[in-house]
Amino acid sequence: MTMTSSHSVPFAAMRHAMVASQLRTNAVDDARVVAAMAAVPREAFLPADARAVAYRDTAIPLGRARYANLPMATGRLLTAAELTPADRVLLIGAAGGYTAALLAELVAHVAAVESDPALAALARQALAGDPRVTLVEGPLDAGHADGAPYDVLVVDGAIETVPDALVAQVRPGGRAVSGIVDRGVTRLAAGRRTDGGFALVAFADVECVVLPGFAVPKPFTF
Image (cartoon, rainbow, N blue to C red; front, side):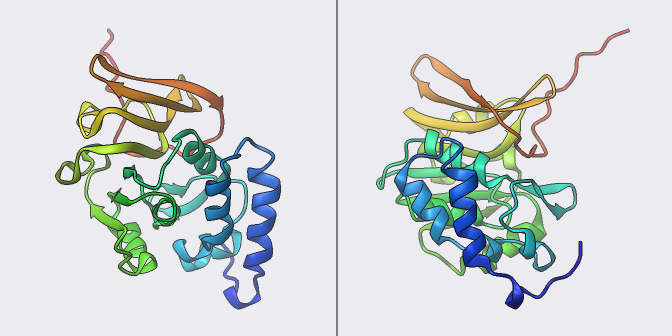
């Protein structure tokens, strides 16, 4: 990726264009989510050589086979989560901390889990000790049981299945949103944990980055 001086990039104008062309035209219609995405500087949560493309409507390479999710995909997940100011949220796939920063503007507290040490370090620096966010460096599929139960589970990427360990950290009646991988296609899905079980229902076929560590073992065949 070509290096570009951040001082020469009109980030505020690009952020405004993202809101107008990527969010408002694609069912990101929660006013609080839109306001947060209009205010939080996405470029601050990306590696230096990726900041010039912070507001593109494509996945942004972060290195080591990780990508920043598309703004529209993240915006639609946060909209579907029906967030309230009192919510405690478990975020899986924090990457550089952008979605954690958005959530911090919308809810009471965020436990943000990231497995990649370099991305966790970037998030730690970019979030600058925000007391509304607990950054957890560890396996994505393990979550952060010490902070459970959570009102909402947000998986900012696509996974093949939601592990029982994550479901168990959501309170009964709590909500969950995630990208899912279904026969090679990524979709956005939402659901709830009830006393009787847990299920996600897809609501949009949308490009969404795939998170590592969630692949379902394929059955052995002769």
